[in-house]
Image 1 (tube, rainbow, N blue to C red):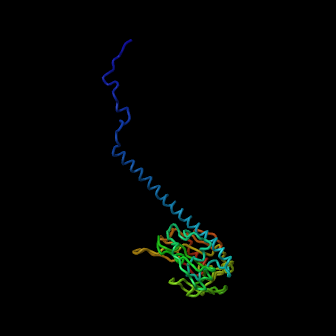
Image 2: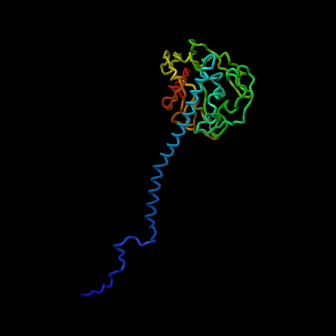
Image 3: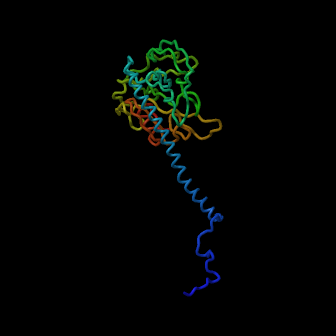
Amino acid sequence: MKVTKPGPNQGLHDSSRQGRRPGAGFTLIELLVVVAIIAILASLLLPALSRGKWQAQRVACMNNQKQFGLGSHLYKDDDDRRAYSGTASDGDDDMNWLYPFVSSLKSYSCPGRQTFVRPDKKSKVSSKAYVERLHGQTEIFTDLVSQGPTRKQPGISYEVFGAMNCCGTANTQYPRGNARLALGTFPSGIAGWDDADSIIKTESTCANYIHANTAFNLKGRVTAPEEIWLIKEADVQPEPGYTKPLHNNYPDAIDNHGAIGENVLCVDGHVEFIKQKRYVYGYELAEDEGRSTP
């Protein structure tokens, strides 16, 4: 058998036909391509993650208010006037009346705001009118009386709309004022204002409420319980140096869920996310104050 000797190049590594040598590093161009791909993926994923966090906070906040709705109806069933809340007026946001029915203090904080109620901060109350609104409670949580002004401050994250028609054309078709209301029914040191000329939201006043004001051509329109607001998210107060315009009772960029909208509990017990574009209409339909602008 004839044996052929290998040529001078046979058996040697042919770099033109083989892959990268083991241990060889990336070139600069390859590294830049990888970095660019990572940057593109991050730009696609981060907004989705941010949106997911916002959605989770909104749902958690909505669940808080669903608990408030159940508690409100239990309070109403025990109340001599069948009022949906124990607040003294439209300007009163005290939520201590709700505590016997919603006893988790974390429920009074929206995750988008991160206020908190300190369990050790309590005070005794002696005002007969105030104790009556609390259905006999004589001790309150001071942080449940009002909102935490900014994020991560003691206080609640919500506002109670226990009365309606406190502004605009007075609706004389319904009982006005609050027999339990006076500037002295608030806890010591807490400022309040007298809305004696408003309509307290009770089972009877909210059953088939007839609108009195003309904004949005709503005069004479019958408003159902599922359209009348009871508890909404509170406005966040701006930090020092904030210069952008803000609106009271309206979703602004600095509020719990931003300018997109906010969760609102209605007197029938359901919770709805009200978007900014229809917020003023929903507010006026619920409150009958003659409001037509932010």
